[in-house]
Structure formats: structure tokens, C-alpha cells
Amino acid sequence: MSEYDLVVRGGTVVNASDIVKADVGVKDGRIVALGEKLGAGAKEVDASGRLVMPGGVDSHCHIDQPSSTGGRNAETFETATRSAACGGTTSVICFAPQQKGVGLADGVAAYHERAKSACIDYSFHIVINDPNDAVVGEDLPKLIGEGHRSIKLFMTYASNRVDDGQILRILEVARRNQALVCVHAENHDAIMFMTEKLLAAGLNGTKYHSWCKPALVEREATYRMIALAELMDQPIQIFHVTCGEAAEEIRRAQQRGLKIYAETCPQYFVLTEKDLDRDAREGAKFLCSPAPRTEAEQEALWNYVKSGTLGNVTSDHAPYNIGDPDGKFWAGDNAPFSSIANGVPGLETRMPIVFHEGVVKGRLSLQEFVAVTSTNAAKLFGLHPQKGAIAVGADADIVVWDAEKKTVISQDILHHATDYTPYEGMEVTGWPAATIARGAVLWQDGEDMCEPGYGRFLAREPYDYIKPRGAFPTPFDPVAGTVAE
Ligand code: DUC
Ligand code: ZN
Ligand code: ZN
View 1: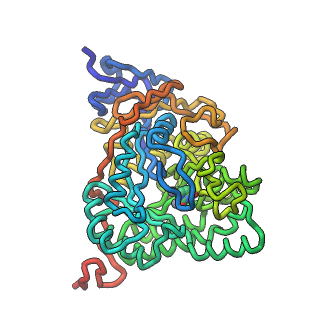
View 2: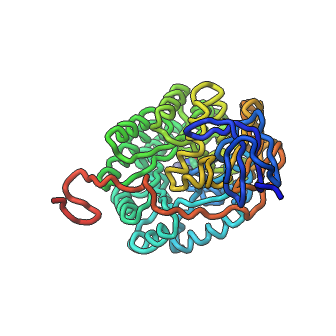
View 3: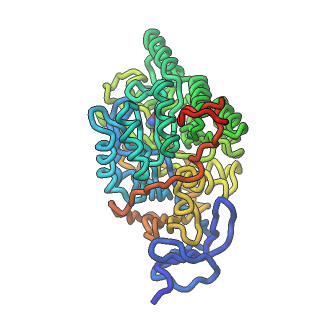
């Protein structure tokens, strides 16, 4: 009988902390041995000449979810997670949104049902757009207690946005119940004002999407959100940072010891506002929020990734079909930029683009690549060391990486259900040779072996990153209602 269920043999194991040559032995879905010349596995994956890294943890993806700006999401949990696995990702955290007219608990239960077709493990951020008494007093504490340890709020989008008073209520309930608050930070009123003015001036094209929401609307909202979090002593994560000026606010807050975390996304490394300056059919492929910026901002972002201000890189996968009347153009073929569904698909291309732009171009070490694509998100969302590490006792979530393989990204080779990729024609070096999730091989040398329903819900217990600092700006604790001695 074989000693192991699976051995990944002969590769170079890269963790966020170090690099070693080792075989990886797997039993019952977990890593049980790391070492030289391990005994036989019932199954063996040859990793010689390849990197063996923790499977990706993509902590920001919109799957089978209604859009904030109209349009039908193009993916089911099956298609999205299949595509993620083929791109080296083994866990996703997506969104269970509060839906109008449906109690929060019922809405979340409906998402658990949909997610039953997932091919890889998953967890949820609970999206709150109406923090009423029932939600903050009853539903949310219960859901957090059941392992949904992160909340998402939007500072913009008419259908989702919460105002500063509502934000404070959400921060309060998160602090009381130990959950992280994740934020889409853009100034809603400024965006609406600019949009009205642009449309009134006849400037409707996709190019003007970036004009209605310049970097300063992101910087202002980021700064405001940090201030509100500081007032409540509540850890937060700022989602999809696109520019140096917002990242700088985050850096300053971190330097003062505040628990402010932040991510960026591959689209902000490789797309710019020039991609929006095309006819609507083409421009819509790149239309996402916040808007893609400039090449100078791309370089600025890398510096903040390198220094750790921006700790993880997520896909913000938000797929809307170009050719579907309910997709990007749900409001009609001639819709202005303000009525085109926001978002780009990217679960499958996230790791290859970060590897190419980061490691191949000399901006990141291999360990930093692992940190920003896997380990840091696992830590930030309470999944580490079960996820995000090649270590004895961890889940056997592994990507075997071919660092030499050149691939031209194109719609033909991807496994998502979206009808385009914004990265069509981009050549990258580095692609997953095999993806293994809890010991099962899901993808190997071009063959997809994903099984719908294999993925499991990841309930999350309280953990260090979401513990408050224990310091308010005044002696008054607004959560407990007490005054410090
Ligand atoms: N912006 C969002 O806020 N969410 C999904 C996609 C997008 O572009
Ligand atoms: Zn967002
Ligand atoms: Zn998003």
C-alpha cells in the first residue's frame, strides 16, 4: 500500500516565508509530509523543474450576484470556480448581498444554495446596503457567529451605497461581533454630480467613465473611511485601490498603527484609461470601478505592493457578457457609460498576470508573489494556516507552476462563462501546470478535472487581524458607552 494518497514530487516549494526543494506528501486532503525522497503516493504529480506554491486565495470575486449597476452576472458558482481552479486558485471569497424585500438570513441562505455547485472551497462577505435595526441587531450578529466574518459596504452605487451614519452603525456591529469590514471607497455624490454634468455636455462614451470618477474621489472616500474606522477602532480592508494618492492615505494610517488593510487588482496593473477610449462595444470590456488609471499610477501601485501597504491582489471578478442583452448592455446598445454594467472577468488570469508583471518583470520575488496571491489573503480573512501555506497540517491546496511557459491569453483558452477577456492577446510567461485542492487534482497539463460540488463552505472563527487595537480617539468608547478611567 502507498504511504501517501498523493505525492507532488521533485519541485521547488515556495512559501511566503521561504523556498526549499522538497516533495509534498498528502493524505486525506491535507499535507502530512515535506521532505526529500518521500515514499510512494497512490497518485504522483511530477513537479521537477517547477514551483510548488500554495493555491491562490482570491478574496474578492462577484459570482452569480446581481450587479450594482444593472446587468446579469455571467457566471454560476460552477463556471467561475472551474475557471479559478484552471488559473491556480483554490479558494474564493465572494459576496452574499442583502437583497431588497428578502430578509438578510434568507438572502444568505439562498447564496449558500447557489454555491453548492462550487468546484473549490469558498466563503462569503455579507454585503449590507440597509443597516436597519433588524439587520444590525439580529441578522448580522447571527450570521457572523455562523462564520461569515467579513462585511462589505459600498460608499457609492445608488442601489448599495451607505452614508456615513450608516457606515458607523455597520462598523459598530462589526466591532461588537468580531468581523472585518471591507469597503468600496469612492465619493458617491461627486461621481453623480460629474456624471450628470458629463451627460448634459453630451459626453456619453465609455471614455468618460474615468472622467466621472477621477482618482480624487477614491482618495477622499478612502481617507473618510479610515477616519470613521479610527473613530470606532474597527479593522477594515479597502478594496481595489487604483492610485498612489489613495494608497498613500492607507500607508499613513498603517504607519500610525491603525488596522487598515488594502488590496489592488491585476486590471489596475495592466489596463489604463486609454482602454476606455474606444467605441462603446470595445470600451465596455474595460469598464470597471474604480476606473483604470494611467501607466504612472500602475508603477505607483507596484511600489505600494512591494512595501506591503497593499497586501493582496484579488481579481474583483465581475463578469458581464458583451453579447448578452442582459449583460454589459442591459440598458441598450447605445447606453451611456453610466448605464453599462461595471466589472471585468479575471479569476483565471489573476495569478498569471501578477506572476508575469510582478515576478517576470523583476518587481516581486517568488515569496512576495505567494504572499500577495495567497498567504496574505488567507491571513487577513482568518483562513491561515489551513489555506495559504505549504505546511504540514495545512489543506493540500497546491499550484504546481510552470514558470517558463509562455501563453497568449485569449478567450479560447479560458474556462469562464463570460464571452470575452479584457486581456485578449496579452502574452504572459508563467502558467499553472497543475492545481490541487484538498488533495484532488483539478487541473493538470491542460486537462480540467473539476467536479461541481467538490467545494466546501469555509466558516471562519475570530482571529487576530480583526481584533481592535483597544484605542479610541477620546476616553469615550462609543461601542460600550463607557469612559476610560
Ligand atoms: N466595481 C465594483 O464595485 N464591483 C464589481 C465590479 C466593478 O467594476
Ligand atoms: Zn467594488
Ligand atoms: Zn468588487
